[in-house]
Image (tube, rainbow, N blue to C red; front, side):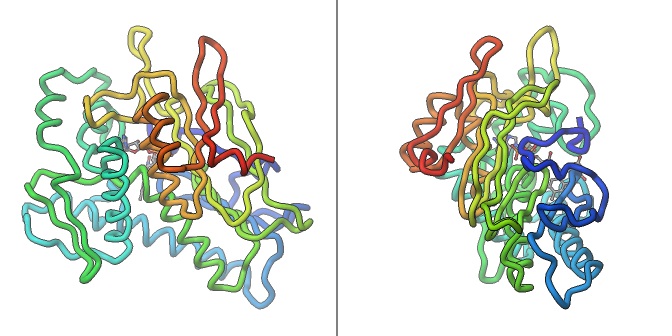
Length: 341
Ligand code: FAD
């Protein structure tokens, strides 16, 4: 399944879900939207800024997203990341500051999550039929998984900012920024808006969100965390979002079933297998959407006990949803509780 076919993990509660590029002013504000990275983006502003034509703003935001896509996509053969992946060299490979920044953050979360978050997992994602290659609809053979596992691991990847470059210990190592780059793009759009003197906004890229300031009616932006069911939409919780980002990872939209078994796109790099436990959704709050995005994947890979324990230890504001039969139970970490309404 491509991500274009996926639904939203997080939805804005006030219902700005139309897919048109520009929408008329609503009582919540102005909305600019479009497509990026195999999904949608939507920017809602409390007030449209004086002196900036709407078309100019749309073009500026789309150009920012197009640049990140051109640099970091594994769906584009000529992106910076794809060129690095195809390179045979094990010398430093010059990249943009943006790509180096994201890879450095990914390596930090790799360390802090004991390897659960690992951007070298891409070949396994492809092997299981997710990612940019067409799925073969075959379950991979255990020997194939073991063979790939032996070559993967972010401990074989290096990144620096001065000058920005990446380095791999062996030529076959590849990176996949799918679990972190959308968050980076959210932060980047928020920074663009603030540079333009726009303090009140809600940025949403494929369900990863960041809110600045407040709504037109001077109340906080509010977001909803979805109940993790593939077939019907429901709301598990709503919360105000004030100068903060939220990102969600789940196993309930992007998966396939074979012989009654669910296979998710979230891959455990320790086993090479899609995750198989009762933790079905993780939402993380952070001032950085990039961090929230990466940590949401890290915790869902770690599972209900280990994920929760690490979130508590690292004082991460995390909202976990656990499947219990046909019901769901939610757990908020201690750092999340102050953010509840
Ligand atoms: P998240 O939980 O945020 O990430 C899950 C993804 O991370 C998995 O699908 C896998 O790729 C990877 N992953 C799995 N396990 C791990 C792990 N243990 N550690 C680290 N990563 C892991 N999709 C398209 O269909 N067409 C496109 O043209 C396209 N272009 C893209 C361009 C860019 C720059 C990016 C970042 C993504 C693009 N995507 C595209 C992918 C798409 O939008 C993804 O489905 C999305 O990024 C995954 O986000 P998520 O919120 O569903 O899941």
